[in-house]
Length: 506
Image (tube, rainbow, N blue to C red; front, side):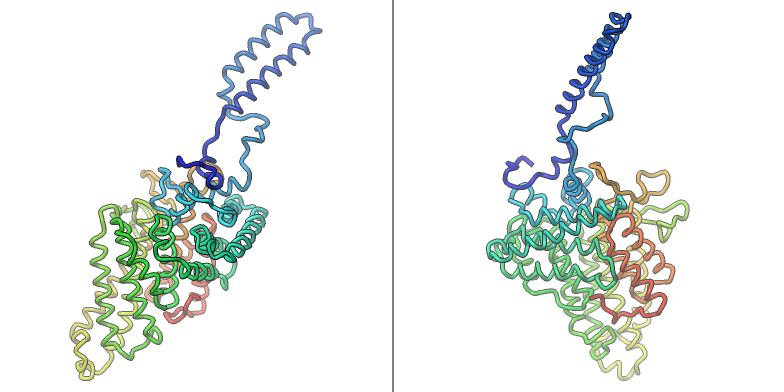
């Protein structure tokens, strides 16, 4: 970041490195003062000459070697990071910075541009701080820090309300970005089952802000990433609630400048998923069998489109399949996947979970029509020939199971697992300024595909139990508390047999 730092708040990257000149100078000065004091104390000694010479010699050695000291009794106040600075670092390490200090794999890429190019504003500063404090509270197991996080969150809310009173500020990048950060705070601090959907109030708030903005405002690099972040949240909501993807979001996505290869992949799957959401929204419920002649061919076409989409992904999206040499509770099957980064894993799981939902609905429709009278069935020529139904049912079940197992296989490496003898680590987070081996964003990206996989009726009890364990792990280790609530929902379903496709998460 070579920009003038006066344009915004303190660059969080600068907190990762500190000038040691002042520290070294103070230590040298302390050594000299110490040697002077030693000399005075020995003034009454009969061996004063020899001891003074020794002290001066040792003081000289200390002055030259002081930079080798690993710690001092008292760190100068100027070199001590405040809690808020540590929180900011924690947030960017977990949601912004990659191990190579790039932003390419983060869903919050717009923040890097805003912190370097724009006036960030107090609302966004408080929102970032609140998220970092919440993460530190979980990592350090200190509820007092969570109290401070909540105060920062409320301060950010207050600042956003003030910004919304001014139309120009309401249309700004920082206001829209801050609102989405507030939604992330709700996800990470969700403390009750009834609050699992609380993040959506901020998503709808950001959607309202989107309607105030001119389409050209989304052609800047910040605007494009804000739109991509919002539409990711909207698609998740639409899949959960069986509603249409807002048309304005689709129109803005089509109007964006010629995208990169990676951005184009994300845009193309958006339109396939939007068509699936439209189909589900047109049905009265999951078990709406009023028009199988329309539903079944549409589902088969959507599934074929997704297969074509994934086959056209660039090589950067390839992943490695690692077979384990001995069973591990961190791995569901006998293999797991290794992806280039979180973004690649998330896109693959997005593709998989949409296909899982398509195959689930397709199977339900196929099983229904297979039980009908063949003569009546043959009247509708739009559906598969009756003789092909058993084959298609078998294929859909096989595809569904493979997709669900692949989602489970994406989890171990995302949570830091590596089998003995390979390079990797087990889940850890950090409170220091070193890059954590597993970042909280990994947990955020896994919650929806994991929960959806365990939520459908085709998940085995063993798979559902394993997923519940991983969700609990995400909450405990990475601080994404919504995962714990989804685990509780699955446990309740398991115990009371309330699991069903018509039960929605609002």
